[in-house]
Amino acid sequence: MRSLLRYLLKNYAFVLFLLLEGAALALVFNHNSYQKSKYLNSSNRITGNIYQTYNSVVDYFHLNRINKELSEENAWLRSRVENITGVPAINDSLVVTLESADSTYRFISAKIINNSVNKPFNYFTLNKGRNNGIKPDQGVVTGKGIVGVVTHVSDSYAVGLSVLNSRWSISAMHKKSGNYGSLIWRGNDYRTADLTEIPLHVDISPGDSIITSGYSSVFPEGVMIGTIQDFSRPDGENYFNISVQLSTDFKALSYVEVIENQDKPEIKELENIIRDDPMAN
Amino acid sequence: MIRWLIKYVVIFVVLVLIQVLFLNQMQISGYLNPYIYILFVMLLPLSAPRYIVLLSGFLIGLTVDIFSNSLGLHAAATVFIAYIRPFIIRSISDREEEINDYPGLKQNKFSWFLYYSAVMVFFHHFILFYLEIFSFTQFFSTLLRVVLSSLLSVFVIVLSQFLIFRE
Image 1 (cartoon, rainbow over the protein chains, first blue to last red):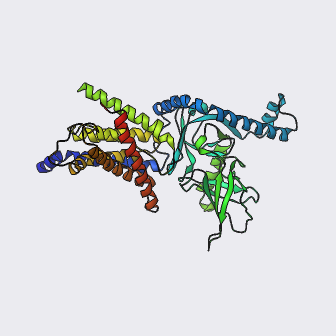
Image 2 (cartoon, rainbow over the protein chains, first blue to last red; image 1 turned 120 degrees about the vertical axis):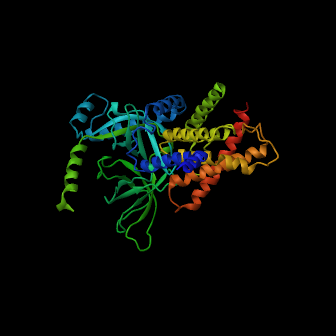
Image 3 (cartoon, rainbow over the protein chains, first blue to last red; image 1 turned 60 degrees about the vertical axis):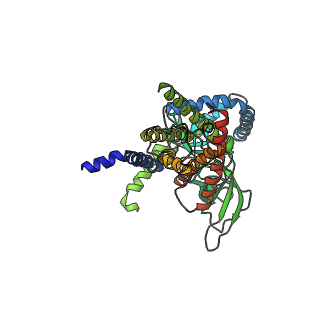
């Protein structure tokens, strides 16, 4: 016993190394199921504040581009509103029209203050959190297309998985035919992702739009994902290999909208009934 | 003692900020991700007790992890190089020449420092990138990422020795 103690004291560096390395690896493997760690991510107050401050400085250099994007989105929205209502969207009647419309989805505007595109698993940080009504599992979109899903929330910041993260896939739909598959990012290029599970009989061609299917409660149906860039028919398989050019420019993200699905608790409850039902399996 | 402490705290903060606010934002390509915060572990005095080196490696790794949402990855890689640092220094130094207690560029020969940073950076990046992807399916493309990122990191580390940490 004493010699063991003496040995440990003599090699305390090795013992300490094993302890710290073990702790680090435990964190890695627990974090992989990404819901567990609550505080040790960039949504906590200190990191959030640092990113926020940094972002408020750097932002001035992108104002030109951000303004242009916002005005383009405004123009697009205005043309949609006009198509829906048939009256010019300048007067106040707009507010009334929207209130009477289907209000399942509520949009919360937020800003991306930290983002990456060049890792195998990319995350983003938002400048709004629980106090602004943001909760985990809400979708994040821009005027151009989808961005990702919120995973961790603190009081005033939130962290989410971007589409450029191979830990999740998105339920996507081929707009022309209505066939759906799943979109997965393979970890190479931030401009393209892969769409699988579109059966061979579907008539597809490069340039076709890919949109969200609405089968998950994260995104509403019809949010733009991208366009088909290229496809092939692999031998002996029933599905196309499609590469999709993403419509969102992940390198230049700034203002985004977080989507709150107000029917989500109800949908979840129903789905849980089916999952727990032994007869359903 | 207090002067040393303050100096290393400042280096810690500066390196973390450079890493998370500048280098992590560069996003040149998936193959070029420089990580220079390990300079903190590299620059600790050679006479520092080993538990200090290990603990500070863990701390700076964990700090970078929290900023980049990759909990534990950087900590694991940095603890590893903090542990093997004495062996690396022993193996790359000649027995006759005296190594300065402060393993910076100016205090030692240029070739020695280059070699030292190359070995440390390579081990760190190797563990970091393979642990991150956690598979050997894309072994060679990950290896390419390790090598290219290491080259860039060593370049930035040597450059920083000329610019900031001149003493």
